[in-house]
Amino acid sequence: ADQSDSSIGTSVSWAFKDLLSRRTDAGVSVYVKRSREDVAAQVANLQPGSWPVASAPPGFTAAGTVKGARQSFCVPGLAPGEFAAVVVQAFNSSGPGGWSNVVVVREPPVAPAPPRALTISPVRSSGVKLSWEPPLDCGGERLLGYDTELVRGPDDPIAESRLASFAASGSARVGPVRFSTADTTSTQAKGLDPCTWYLARVRAVTV
Picture 1: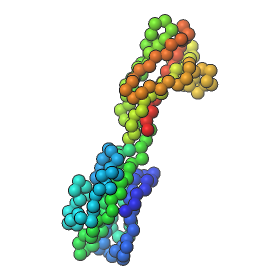
Picture 2: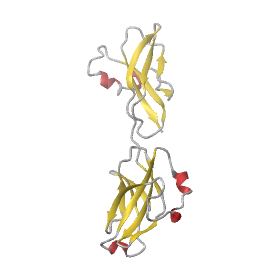
Picture 3: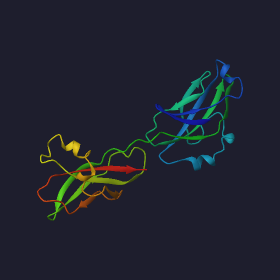
Picture 4: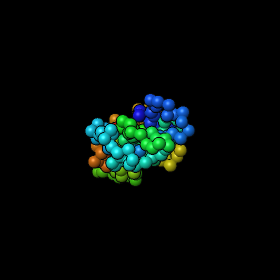
């Protein structure tokens, strides 16, 4: 068995060593073992050749069956970033054959959801504190931290032009983009101009 990623999911494929694909009574059963952690090290110690052919491998569950000449299967139900160990077994009217090698597939991760409940509050006379809550979903990756950015806004913070402020030149930005570690959900900006509107945003950073 081999693995591959596609735009519609994570798939496994295999090749037949005989004329199995030409038999109308033949097919392939697919079994998976799902995990949030990389299971490659565990798979390296497995010995499919010693598994009984009449029952599912230990810890694996049936994921589906492929009939005829088709030689691939899209693993269903994986969340972004989730791993799955996959093993397949050919069968025909005479019964099941031996187990294939085990491969590890991973559903491609996606961008993290935005942090929640961003608030900005004054700190002394020329500074502010940005606070937020972690994102509900990190897209299947580990959260590294947060990028925060503060820019001078228009006179009316409700105006549509506030959206264009973040696309303005670097002169509108107050200092560099700040990075906070994953265990930090607040940061401070100092040295701001009095009686001036500022706009703030924060995004999650994953790896």
